[in-house]
Image (cartoon, rainbow, N blue to C red; front, side, top):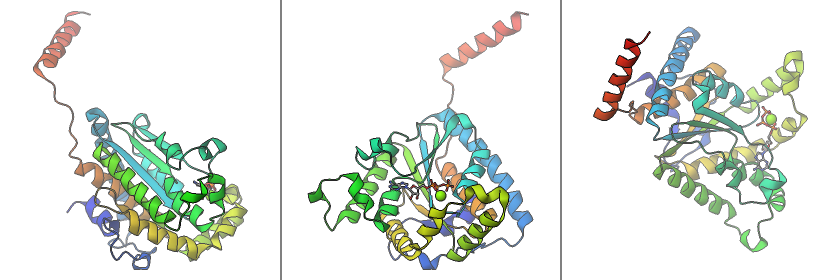
Length: 293
Ligand code: ATP
Ligand code: MG
């Protein structure tokens, strides 16, 4: 088993059957007890990712969509920064989705994210995503009013309907060669409190603090229920969730990197081969270059 498989598989959910969030420990560091070992693996992950992304880009067939969802202070930004440090920015784009604009609200809920899907050969990162429509909107149903969905469509199956739409959407993407991997950074309520206090007490971290985050924390249990049902309803073999332990940032980054490397390896990417005509052209260009000064 590769290191990438070893560190990602235990957290990968391919079927929602019997899924329970409480079975996943935010403080888990499974096989690793030495930070030095983790750091070596992290460096290796960056190298492998860069190599694989180069092939993804050259082959220009698959697109990869990485979705990050989490409670505040779980480390989404840090995890994304780590992934980005390993890839060529030309083949990778990051989009952050905050509260929808009035233009967004004039459309169906998948509209604004659909516009940002990755091209073939590229990696797209969503910092929050259409999954917010089954999280924040579910925890605060009053937000639904702003969405202006016709009243008669807001039945009691609304959330099931959204899950179904998302499942179908991701299956559609997969059938088109755009594959989705979803990361829930699973931080504990206790660790979130510690990180909020750190933001308040450290001047360089003050800018990260938002009073709204403390308010959302009061809905912790509702969020956990929403996450659990969302992960159970939208995990599949072709579009799995990873429930990533997030109480130790170095471990979070390692698991995310491992999952990406594992995913790219599974695609069996190879550089395009050159046909005889192209080979002739290359040879002609080479001799032309060599002949002239
Ligand atoms: P950071 O705090 O690190 O800047 P962030 O992703 O938490 O990053 P914020 O501006 O603090 O960014 O929060 C974005 C807010 O937008 C979140 O509270 C999120 O729930 C909300 N949001 C995202 N998508 C939707 C949506 N579709 N409907 C309503 N609210 C949304
Ligand atoms: Mg925030």
